[in-house]
Length: 335
Image 1 (spheres, one colour):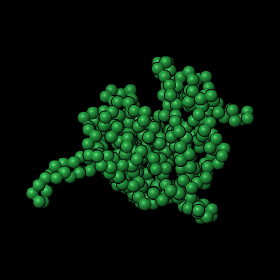
Image 2 (cartoon, rainbow, N blue to C red; image 1 turned 60 degrees about the vertical axis):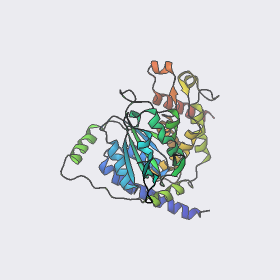
Image 3 (spheres, rainbow, N blue to C red; image 1 turned 90 degrees about the vertical axis):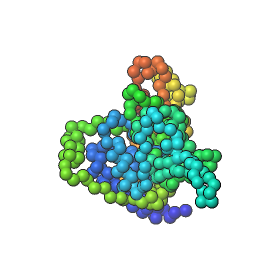
Image 4 (cartoon, rainbow, N blue to C red; image 1 turned 90 degrees about the horizontal axis):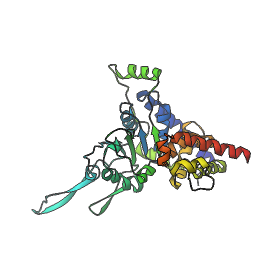
């Protein structure tokens, strides 16, 4: 068991290092502090992130920058309708052996890395999307009847175009649940876009240096799990997650009316990890109930679905989550 004083010192040192990493990243990914914080926090948790936004908003640039800053070996796969699972996982080829016979040799695919960028993941068919399921959960892939472990740490940062666009396939619920957070990348405001123009259309591009190594990131992920979470924060997590399930006794009439299915236990697990990382990203030693409310959208938005009637009426999932948070706060005050 780590001495409490030593643990505090290690947490403070990690918080400072995260601040350095964030400073380097924001020099190339300008004006999107919330997106950078969420992505860094998900890596610190050892999870995967789904970046949702229109093309041209810098999602690919962010992932490439993260790969360098965090000291990770990265690969990029452009998902297209004709992409096959073997294009991601690898395959066995038959070749001539030294003794004159023939033998199979496994040729690893791009998934054998530490940071995989799955670009426009919802443009590939469901069959190809499913090639990532085992890798994201078990950190290994099965090819030709043999389990092959992936490098550690292993993270998937996927980008997704808005689902309303033509030529996209919705991700299956099981795969969405494997993403720790869903991060919406919005349009920049006017001043931010001006800074982007000045930074990216000149002669010199901002250089990126590494702040972490892969081993340091693994150690940081282990340290994160030692950060205590207060009982009030844990109860807040359970209140919000359970209130989003239409068949739960604590769910409001509105949730029962518009939600087809709600978040499972992975949502509560994601909250536990992300609130710890979120506190570190903001220089605090322990998470608060306010952190839970702030992270509700990224943690819950892709783990719930509106029913057909609600979608037909144009209901918004983020508005619903905000209502659930407000209701749970009112209930706590009344108690």
